[in-house]
Amino acid sequence: MRPLLVLEDTTRPRWRLFSFFAVEWWATGWAWAGPLFWVALGWAVAGGADAGTGSGALQRVAVGTVYGAFLWLANVVHTLGHVAAARVAGTPMDAVVVTSTRDVNVYRGAKREVGERSRVVRSMGGPLANAAVGAAAVAVGVQMDGVAGWLRTFGVFNLCIAVWTLMPVPTMDGWIVWRWVFSRGRRAP
Image (cartoon, rainbow, N blue to C red; front, side, top):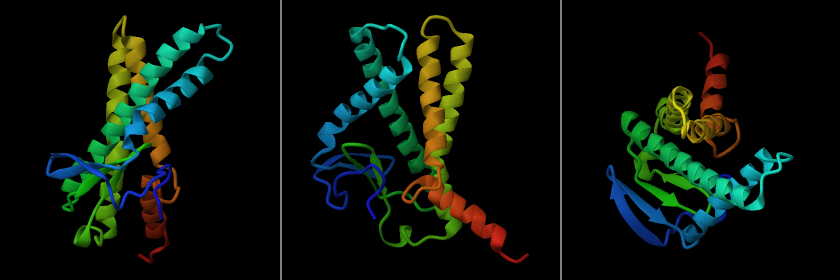
């Protein structure tokens, strides 16, 4: 099953980008369109947030572009959270495939066939990283003047992504986590 919001085939990435924390980072042939996706998503958020406030078009485009950068950074935070959690679980990730929409984690061989608890730990890494960064950004942003609004916005985006990825939707982190939570409740003591 193709991961949610991923449009291209991630089984045959086109370019090797780099290695980071012993994880190979690859890109699909359409990964170049990723910045366009994130900026368009930022513009959509900015347009929805400013509905009826009378902001000028140029200001909405600028704010939307910053929002797109924040959303992309939140995606990177999420991916790095999974990289760290996979190490903690004892099943390090083999690769990350950058696509036109989001990153995809790759586990090969025995790393794919791990126990349920290890899979839950790996799945929680991304949402927990977003939640931690989001909470810190909001907490610091509340204490500051000037750029505080931007920092709080970055924090809120991270918190929203943490919650969204924990939804019980197939191929998302929440699918693994909630399936484990509910299966434990059905087991006999």
